[in-house]
Image (cartoon, rainbow, N blue to C red; front, side):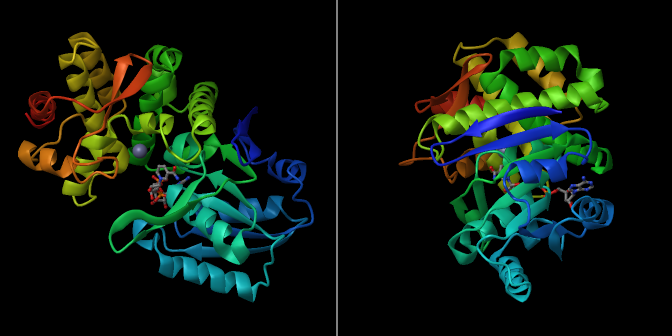
Length: 358
Ligand SMILES: NC(=O)c1ccc[n+]([C@@H]2O[C@H](COP(=O)([O-])OP(=O)(O)OC[C@H]3O[C@@H](n4cnc5c(N)ncnc54)[C@H](O)[C@@H]3O)[C@@H](O)[C@H]2O)c1
Ligand SMILES: [Zn+2]
């Protein structure tokens, strides 16, 4: 088991990364949560696989559970309202603890419910997707979609602890594993050159989800994200770098009608970003080629097949991070060090898009 301490200006909590659920009860006790009333929030795909195991391990606690329908379509205020009703029925109070058991959808919603029920109650993250283990469970962003707008309503709210059992990845559909890998590789490119080296050196073991290598990747990503978030909890500057590949990627994701997975679009977006990076003279054509090879190795797409480049370009201006009609594109000063480019020439941005649509 590996352990990481997360420090933000508003809180401090541990992340455990391990290969079983055996240490969960102890982790809760260590966080001062012994004797509290617990409520596990999970969804229809995860519950049949893991809920009974978790309940069995938490036999000492008074416990209820709530299962919602899996999927982004459930990530809305109606589902949150169902959560609140359950909390009231179960007489949860300010000392009760919510446990998010599932992927990013479950974590974001449980965190939001925890931030708002009775003006805030504690919660714990047990992320079960790779995306949630390397990205969404760290950093304290919680929320729901509203009227088709992603993550429109939410709060910054930190958990009491994050417990990652990477063995849960064994039941995750392969395309979901790949999508999580895209965010992990992104982390390597923006802030951790050693991790990028590790990815290249151990790619077969990582792809096979071998214990040691998987743990190392998750640990490195959590550490990097924790560093970024500790410097910039509420996204005023540094945190922007987490959006490497995302300005292009979000545009493709939106145009696909959210049919492509987020992580897949991030891989395509990183291919575009690496192209732009190259034409700005910061990295080379070999870097671009190496990145694309790595994405392909992990079964990630690198081209937006069937998309019009003009449409992608237009769509980029709707990005949340676009300020005053100017594109803010996260690029690399060098491999392992990101910055935000506010003045990328339009022709070079367009050439980068041509590269991913050709
Ligand atoms: N808070 C943040 O900082 C942050 C960052 C990135 C993404 N997000 C959010 O995360 C969400 C995406 O997260 P996600 O990709 O984990 O989606 P998800 O929670 O929908 O999980 C993906 C799929 O995997 C299934 N699943 C989960 N764990 C499983 C397991 N162990 N075995 C089998 N199936 C399993 C789910 O039922 C679902 O079908 C989005 O809503 C996004 O906005 C939040
Ligand atoms: Zn992302």
